[in-house]
Image 1 (tube, rainbow, N blue to C red):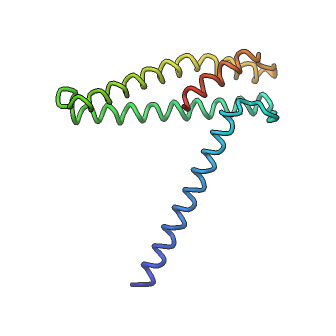
Image 2: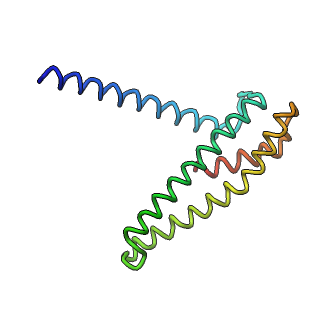
Image 3: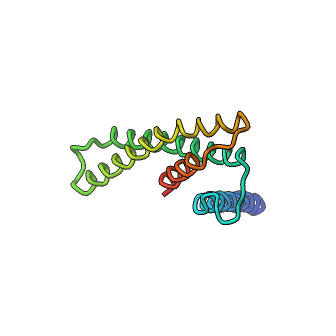
Length: 142
C-alpha cells in the first residue's frame, strides 16, 4: 500500500511541476512579447511575427469563447433577478468586458488576415498595421 501511494504521489508531483514550468514559460513568453512589442533589440522576421500574432489571436479567441460559455451557464443557473446588488454589478461588468473583447477581436481579425496576406506574398507588412495589431493584442492581454 505504501509503495503505491509513494508512486502516485511522485507521479502527481511530477505532473504538477511540469505544469508549473509550462505555465511559467507561457507567461514569460506572452509577457515578454507583448511588453516588448517587437522592440528593444528583438528582431523577428515577418513570418515569425505572423505566427506569434496568429497564435495570440486564436488563443484569445478560444479563451473568449470558453468564458462566454461559462458565463452563460452561470446565468442559466442563477438568473439576474436572483442576484443581490453586488453580484448583479459584477455580472454586468463581466458582460461589458465580454463586449469589449468581442469588439477588439472583430476589429483585429481583418488586420491579422491582411498581415498574413503580406507575409504569404513575401511582402513586408506596413509598420502601421503591425503597430495597430500589437496595440490591440496588448489591450486583449491586459
